[in-house]
Image (tube, rainbow, N blue to C red; front, top):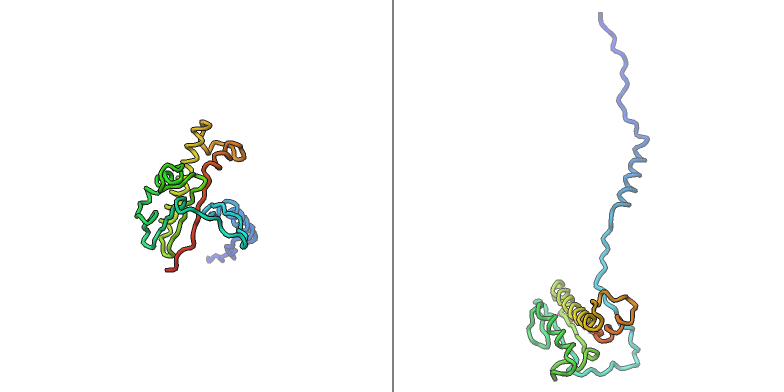
Length: 181
């Protein structure tokens, strides 16, 4: 007695909802994925100067020259300086108030000039720029603590107190074009 084998149905998976599932997964990953946006270096640029007006005269005493060469060495007024010493030297230069005849006359007159070489290591330039910004932040913070008893960062954005401290220590930073190398 031989049994006849019955006709088997083929095992297929219904693919009609596969497109729906793929679409839902695509939307899910688009919603939950964060895209990292590089913001760059935040600097407030001065207005474009009028070409007919000559630049204002700057006394050599009020200008602190910082050069970052191709090897990553930092030279402040032609003296080799470590990155760690930049902040204190800038604070001393800016907050001189005419005491030392070699340093700036006042914080309002002090200008920090930064110049690099085209082959300057990027991380050294950024570290040095961070030190310059931190020097001004510390000066503003100290003045705010002395005058108002609160850190500069705690002052409201559009307050008279914040404006007063900003006018006391304006960030006058000149970033010169890199040398050809």
